[in-house]
Every structure is written in C-alpha cells, then in structure tokens.
Length: 371
Ligand code: AMP
Image (tube, rainbow, N blue to C red; front, side, top):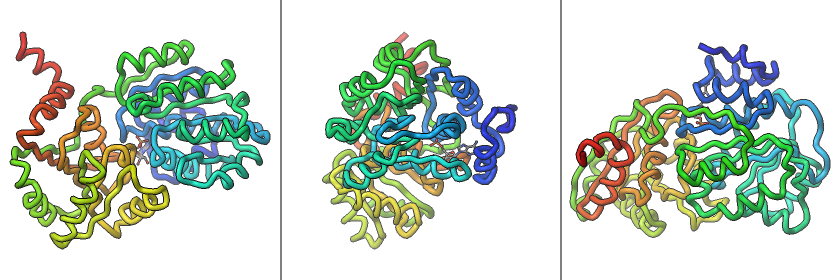
C-alpha cells in the first residue's frame, strides 16, 4: 500500500496531512498525486467521499509553494459548480496549506465584490470560484487569467448538468494553453468525454470503483408508501433515529413547507435551497455542521458536495428526478470510512424515477431482464 511519505509531497504539506490524522492515501490520492506532481493532466473519475479534494489540493500546494503571485494574476484556478463545494475546497486548502505561505481567494456569488477585489489585487496563488462569479470579475476587468498554470475542474459532471458548459468553455479559452489541467467527475458521460478530450492533453486517467454504485458502507432501506402517508412516517422515523439527518426534497417550496411540518412535529429542523442568500445558507450549514440542529431539509442544488462527517442518515422524502443525484444524495452519509443509512420513501408517483435509479445502479440486472 502506498504511503503519504512516498508521494513526494512538500514536507510541510505532509505534516498537515499527518495533523489531519490521515494515515494512508485513498486510492484516488495514490493514483492522482504522482502524475499531478509531474505536471501531467489528470482525469479523475471518483465518487464523493473518496478523498478526491485532497488528491488535487495536496499536489497543488506542493507545486505552488515555490514562487509568488502577481497582482490580479492568479497562479491557479479551481472551478466548482456550487458555492458550498467551492467553500469546502477553500477549507481544504486552509487545512493542508497551514504550514505553507499561500494566498487564496474564494469567488462565489452572494458575497460582496469589494472584498474579493481586494484579495485579487494583492495577488493570489489559488483562486477558487464558481463559473458565474468568476466571469463577472473577469468582465469587470479586475482579473487576468493568463497566469494560471494549474486549472482544476471539480465535479465536472455536475457543472455540465447545471448548464455551465458555455461558461466553462469561455473560461478555459481565457487561459494560457500551456497549463496543467485536472478534471474530476463522479461519472463519465459522453459530455465529460468530449470536454476532457478537448481540454486535457494526454491525461492520466484514474477511475475509482464502480461509477454508479453507492458506497458499500451505506445501508439502504426502500419503503413503498402513498404520498399522503410520507409525513407521519417521516416524523416517526425521526423519533426512532438518532444522529444527524439530511432529508432531500425536489423543490425549494417543499423544502420550506416540509421544514415547517417537521417543526410542528416537535423536531428542530433547518432548510437549505437555492433561493436563500449566501449568508443564510452559511448560517444553516453552520448550525447543522456544529450539531446545533440535527435535521437539515435540502434540495439537490444546495446540498451538493456537503462534507459533514457526522451525517448518519439520508432520507429521500422525494425521489430524485435525475438518477445520478440519488448517488450524490446518499453519498452525504458514510463519509471517510463511517457507515450510514439511507431511507427511500417511494410513492406510486415516484416509481418511474425509482426505476431509472435502479437501472443506473444495476445495469447488469437490467440487461438480464431484457435479454
Ligand atoms: P472528499 O471526497 O474530498 O469530499 O473527501 C471525503 C472525506 O475524506 C473528507 O472528510 C476528508 O477529510 C476525508 N479524507 C480525505 N483524505 C483522506 C485520507 N487519506 N484518509 C482518511 N480520510 C481522508
């Protein structure tokens, strides 16, 4: 088994990894870190919870530890589909670069431009951004991307699903073609193949585990139930279960109304969805992360990439419309080697969505059925 000490990381990065309590690199880390450090392009196919963030942050910090940033010309760029994911990537840089002098800026919507401008003006080693806000800064003439030597696209499949293809193309075309590119995606679709073929040069490809399977340490329970019985059933389940719970719904409106009903059932709950302002989202995530509130009701867009190790249960109150979202939802539990439970409430109206999920997870069974 590979050891962190064999990966040629900067000793100060290694120290931060040891302080974080990690003993051995995860497979995506063992696979991606060596070629990344050689300056190769990397295409990493890995599910959430596999340690993929450190697989690009650790080599980036090692490479960026040498050299300094110039004003308005960031040296590296990490693009993320959502604000929450971008904030989490920034937190990873914070942890692993604690012994290295590295400047970073987080460019996400819902935060004032002024603060972000000041950081960019000073010069940053790492820019972590969502596509929309990055383009806003660029169009205001405050940012030059030609100095970017390393670019990472995190959760590329989600980025494309969320309709960011055009923005992504625009951004990549503003960069210097002599750069290193790393792309990470939980799934490999035709679109990912096309984009990676266009923007990565002779990449090292690392695919971890089956691409459409939930992590093995998640116990799933499927309950067939009529829609009007879901709420009382949920309240009973919340009473029965201890530990942090995330409940998924498909619509912003349902997130708010379900949260109200749960509160009426005498449980403390908070909601998160795309209509909340950034400071509201931060407050909600903080109270859930700090375990001040154990129940979070969420839509997919807001919950993507959440890395909160103490999430014990994922309840799919609504079955996801996009089958791949189901894998991401249940990947919120069983993080970093913990075990977790997923409960799927399936009404007759959910059955076609549920079958689509089954086809994604068990394509072999499906092939057998139709052969
Ligand atoms: P990610 O897939 O990047 O979202 O990471 C999932 C979780 O794994 C995070 O909580 C990390 O802190 C944790 N993690 C990352 N690398 C390791 C490692 N080598 N050993 C144990 N846990 C890790």
